[in-house]
Length: 183
Image 1 (cartoon, rainbow, N blue to C red):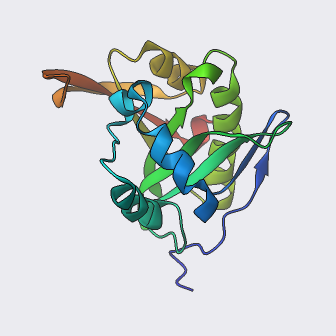
Image 2 (image 1 turned 180 degrees about the vertical axis):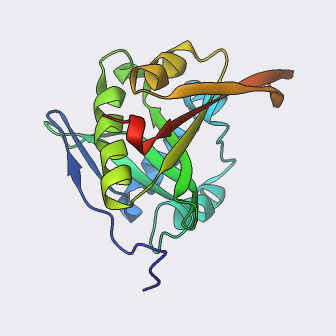
């Protein structure tokens, strides 16, 4: 195995959640999850068919992981997969990358994503020796903006009219978190 790739992702646990490596049985969840307008609108992920989903799944969700990886967020009590966390654009030399996350809408507002990201960020900083993590969010996604600020991310700026969503160009906010700022 290359020192710049991972074959196995650890299982991370919190009081209410398990964050685990995805497997082939999760393909249907991923396909259905990104078909939901509430998810695809802000993640910009949408698959036209299961073949497209499988192509994405094979790159992002199955080993080896060298440039990106996605893990599932599972409710501890029921074992239900309810969302994902991702580490994207992983630059090993400069020890940075981008955070991605999504959660089924019926679980919004319950602090589950905050709980998941606290554990995931700790893993990234402590075990992968990441120095800087970026996160972007649509300026209209107020819940995501508040979540990033609560986690200690600093707003670096606005990427003006970066994405065309629903026929309109929309701004994307760029946040970052440095390991020394994370507690």
